[in-house]
Length: 478
Image (tube, rainbow, N blue to C red; front, side, top):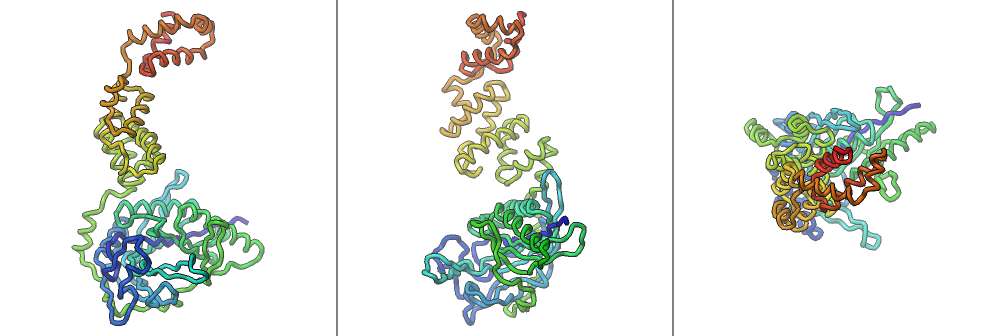
């Protein structure tokens, strides 16, 4: 029997606010345990939550970016459960009336585009963190994260493979970072994923029993965890068994999921409106002010790069991966006034390779867009060959000097004068009469030998196109 996976993702995005969603405590990462948990975060008697306006603004910004409906009235609820890292015994979240409803996100897998529906996005507070190491068999609780603002984004069950799930997760990650609503740091827990997975016979319209894989914070691990869970469920069903609805954890070391607890339903959480928080009411002016400040979104930028710069889909996807990289590329094109494809190659290959090698972000590049544009101008006008250009780039990277300075200091200007190149060719042919005879007798592979000798004699400075043109003419006896 053929089986079809059905996958939906719940992504928890930590919003970029300086203070928590219902208190003034700091959200800064890395503070000593329990130093950023105030009386409100701990739910001490007599404290009242006050909603963070910036968290609301960032949630609306996301909703507008995905073409969703922004609720003019939304409600905070208490989600009741008991766990050591939840000091109040409940989590303030949104349930029946979330702030964002609907919307779509475009993904691309193997060159094919797909629209993935988004069910909702709601505001909520984060819980604390349980620490199981270095406590001699006991568990430590760090409540610094308690009350940190989250936007939980719930997709429709539109994904049909682990690859599509990862593509969706990456597209969402790209969007929230573009919007500036999240720093996207997976290692610090700013962007976390819960994956709901089920399988059904191919062609079946009803959903199978789903399991939830909790708190996966790596694109690679999401793909592997979902792949394992699909195979596990198929194996159970084909053996005549029944998949149990439950929450599971992914064990990266063993590359498998394991049972954590039976999956709760909404009724188990006993949701009810939080009596300490009034309904959240938004006016049109607030929403429209946010809409007017939206940046060019990743999908729009991708399509513009295809049209404006005639790039391939691959190049456009790479160059729009981050706002900073896209801005850098456009600055190089504008400043160099050169072929956009030539600029794309230099940004992706030489610059990208150097950044990866040294573990740097684009903002930390020793070679600014202006200086890379200057180098590309010298390649475009024939001052440098491509090979010399790469050498100059490496020196620019190491020294911080611009291309023109390095060319002048080291005498790297390309030799383009036909008479000068002809003289060198004549010398090479005179020094290698046997190879000349063999070439003229039909051994045309020797052409590369002569090119190499000429380039060696000029220390790589001769214009390669001129060398090929003039050498061919000389060897043919013209």
